[in-house]
Image (cartoon, rainbow, N blue to C red; front, side, top):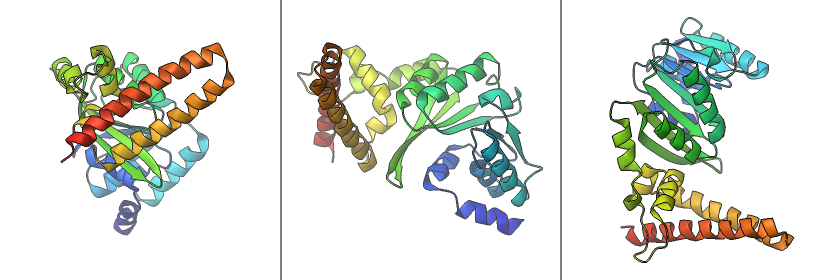
Length: 269
């Protein structure tokens, strides 16, 4: 059993390893959309978490998760459950919820459904890895009293991922209010970006990632600009009035992103 546990640890990907690194030691964890249960198996086999729930909706991954847990000899500590989102969790049985590998809007929906059902009442920590739409997750956290505490950005196999960690604290509103202040956005002296637009850009970039941008951060946003440019060109070539209006909006967004990136690069030591 010990050998199998060690094998599971060595096979954890950079993405899942980053998520695991943000989970508080000693926390009972629920991994929603767990796929093959690699993350819960790692956390428990390492001794970082005393127990875990692996929730999975689809039958194939659910069976694979059960097999993974069984082969790791962790059936008494990792409970694999079949169900949709937070439906697999009973209030009070988990300290940390992890959700990874989904779109940001879907993650926000899962969290909201869990909140309405009372599944998050005693949860202390969220570790979330949206594939896209990270701003939707940040907005949900702010709107529901979760303090964003850490962010990571990484590249693996040609894909870029962001990982967010949030906790429930009494002064979450003050904490988040400070994070998303318009004045924190690096802009030119004569910038036309309004305060509201600046705040929204911080939600989009990520306040911690914006404060300490690394090479992966720049890689992501350079790639995003290229994608937006291709979309704009297609819309402009279509000739449709609605598409042309939308393309103009995209061009404005691109100009704002480019301004921020230029200021960040200028300030780079």
